[in-house]
Length: 42
Image 1 (tube, rainbow, N blue to C red):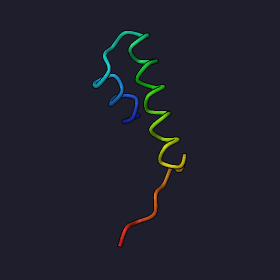
Image 2 (tube, helix red, strand yellow; image 1 turned 45 degrees about the horizontal axis):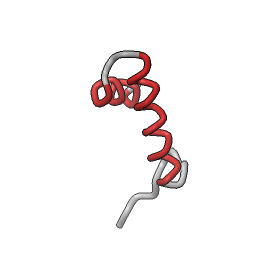
Image 3 (cartoon, rainbow, N blue to C red; image 1 turned 45 degrees about the vertical axis):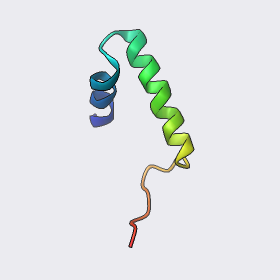
């Protein structure tokens, strides 16, 4: 999946770095309202 590849690219390839990146992306998602699809802006 693209998000998994983005995490590996941004945060490294070791398991610890990947898990840290995943936690960070999870926090970003929660801040955005935990919605998979955001409404289209006019």
